[in-house]
Length: 102
Image (cartoon, rainbow, N blue to C red; front, side, top):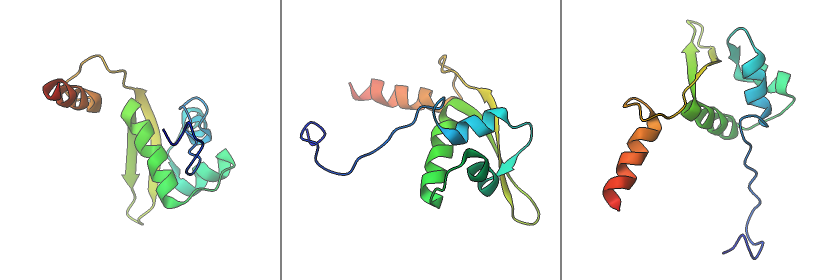
């Protein structure tokens, strides 16, 4: 209801095809650090904002996150994980929970 009244803070939701981080990950042929991703995407994000975007992408893509011996964390976008009812897909668990509630 507050959205209809235009109350509260504005929240922008980016679809993967519009998210600059997603675009850079899709084009990259190698793993990238958060700093490299933001630089190439032309955005400056807080740690929380960056992690939220990675989490959202990981719901639909096989996100490869690795930490090197030096502590550098890199991100690489893997295959698209369409939800077709696979047991290991995160959306299957959510679907099962909502099914038991109704």
